[in-house]
Length: 79
Ligand SMILES: [Zn+2]
Image 1 (spheres, rainbow, N blue to C red):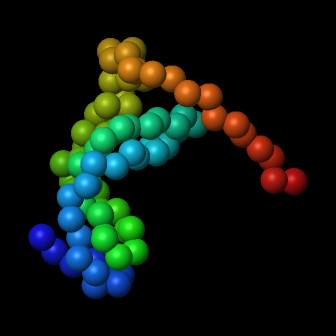
Image 2 (image 1 turned 45 degrees about the horizontal axis):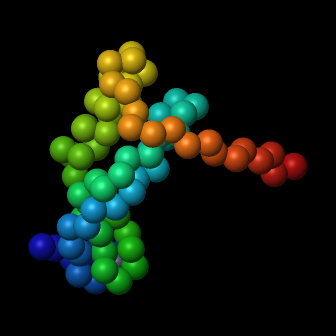
């Protein structure tokens, strides 16, 4: 267990949903075990998790892995 870089709060491992952008696509990963600050909510991605996410989207883009579910995301132009 360590403390938050920003607020010095306590961090703990939590299973959270992660929005991950790769190229022009958005991927959602459910229940990713990340270190999360209990005070400000800052998330810390370990090298291992980052690499796994990277590998996942690359394999997915080569159609080696099928997603469990697909959601539609509304896109808005600010101007
Ligand atoms: Zn914090």
